[in-house]
Amino acid sequence: MTTLPKNARIPCFLCGEWSAVKLSKKEKPYFVCQGCGIQIFVRCEAGISNLRKLIRNLAEENTEFLRIDKSSLEVLSLTSKLLKLQNNLEEVLNRKSLVDEVFGNAKTDAAEIAINSEIKSILEALKKHKKQLGRN
Ligand SMILES: [Zn+2]
Image (cartoon, rainbow, N blue to C red):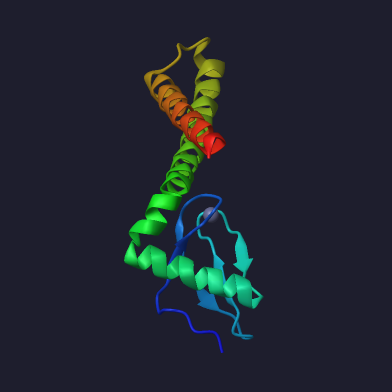
């Protein structure tokens, strides 16, 4: 039987949102990300063992684990922020194109400038991580 800590949560590798780890009818752990809808099933013992370690390390904030994987966690969080900003930018641009149609060429608005500058700084931070990972 698979045993996992109760109320275990892990971050989604795609969007960084935290989701509960559940057990299927066949006692295999899985999680469904509310952020992007992916479902992950862990079917073999090696994966289940890795999942158990991940849950334990995340719960204990195991310092060794954080030292090794701090960079990966930061990349996850940056990627998640980037996705949200890109969605925001898309909304702003859609709204702007509507305004353009009605009133003629509207100026680049403050929201667009702010989002673009945030996106730029996140991309810079991701580039730094890429360089660091390349060195290891
Ligand atoms: Zn997700």
